[in-house]
Image 1 (tube, one colour):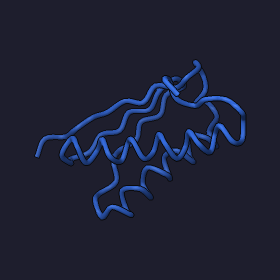
Image 2: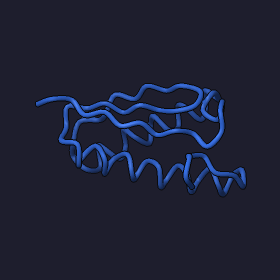
Image 3: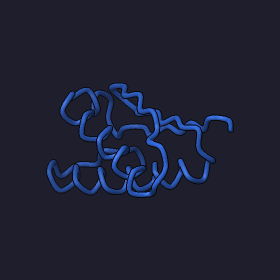
Length: 88
């Protein structure tokens, strides 16, 4: 199976530069995949985006990415009164 890759862009440059936030996002991606019973995606973290790659069908990785965006975005908005992801 070919690998699928999806990218989430942060709402602001350097939003994801905080190591604690990056660790939280990565752990959340792994937990979502585990909950769905699929292998966790590889998560590459950059200051302005994250890239998720996995040997999963694209719709499955899209579902994980969508849930990751929804849950982390809601948490971040409640904590910081600001959007984490572009387009929120």
